[in-house]
Image (cartoon, rainbow, N blue to C red; front, top):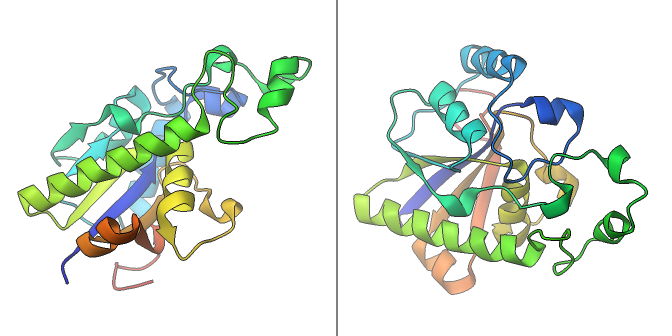
Length: 210
């Protein structure tokens, strides 16, 4: 049965990442250090060739796609943007530690958004919609090997909600410019809304297996 391979890749580092700030929809570019780190990884690691790259519309993701997948056709998909942290955008945990709404937010849950922000349930729903669009596009264009450049939170939501086998949440964390590769079959996705987790990305070897 035909399978569709997708590399889910986290964007490179921004200054806000270095500062420990919440940046969801805040549209920051990569920092100078973030750009250098990605070029270093592109030189030292094996990033398999892909046929197309789907990206979040935010600058940090588009820049990452240009560095890691040069000369590849890219398509922006708004559904791949990071969570909107509302009133917590561009603030650090230290700045928010005495905020009652922030303490409530840290309790977690699907329906516990930051004030004026987006709930985890909303993020999960649009992750599912984004995957549907990407899978349909790959099938229509006859593509079998593509990449998605998005955000750490989006990758964790996709894997924890739709990936098998199930791993501990901490195992879904990935460094800048890195992520996971998944395999999607039309029957598995249509039947159970799930995909197979193949391994970390980029692979440590030449892509011959995990």
